[in-house]
Length: 410
Image 1 (cartoon, helix red, strand yellow):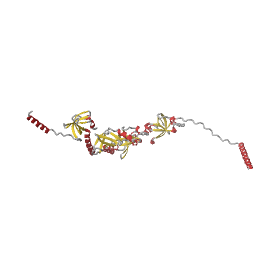
Image 2: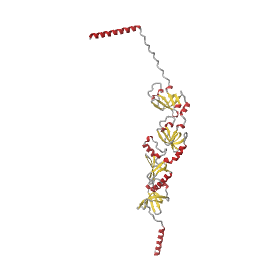
Image 3: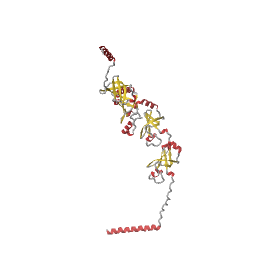
Image 4: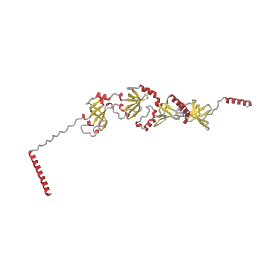
């Protein structure tokens, strides 16, 4: 190669060097843009400015990205964690770059009150924890809607935790109600997300309305039902026309039910299930009257009588005194639970929800034993009276002689 050729090559090299982009080595902690080269074994190879190659290992992917949604050539923002001299690669993090984006977005959502969707990753007795690429958020129990609020008998901490753990992984519509600059205190509220629709629903609700809802809680005193962001109580006395011992036998949490609004007092909503069904006492009054015979199974036995399971859940009482004409020491000697028997209606007051039944009224009363004639006192004869007077005189004489002898001895 001649000297002239060498000079030409040097000039061309200088020209190309000047025209080439400046090589800027990424700094640790810097968020940079690149494009995906390929994905293998849950690791992502990234092209950075056509000058460097970086790698995002699986633990730096985060939990808001699905690998299946990524493809070669797709742009991607990552944070530089360092480099690997051995492999000649930049060590990158998709998770930490997304954290910065998420924190910025959460601040915007806080300012705008925008409703977003999150999925709890853990639960404790105070609420639900949310992990957004390492940013820790929290939904306190007090910020849950009635549908998710833990309605637990006696506020048992273990049962509350069990309920909350069942919500992990579910999608929650929430609003950001607190966020700090470093992302150490992010609070979400499910209640705030539905506040507007809830207020609107409450304004339009009126007594007599029939609504469809979901059973959100079951306690000993009734059922909680959620509808349109509102929650009302079906008191145990409004579940069924018959006596309700256990509300859980009439519904399960998550079950869809129809209820009637029977009371509104501020935020307190009273509901009824039984009023959507015909009053069984009225049905019974149309079919039976005092003195009729009714057939039904024995539902339970108590110390004071046996109960018959009548139509519509009505419980009719056979009092202890109406079991048998004879002495009843144990009611179970005469009837058993589940046994179908016939009884006579001896008291029927549908308005007062009372019905009295009798078994012995359908039995023939035993014959009474013949009554003994009263003994007639025998009148004393004159002779008897004289004999009694003589005996009394002899007794008196003997007594005097005994007293006189006793005196002489002294």
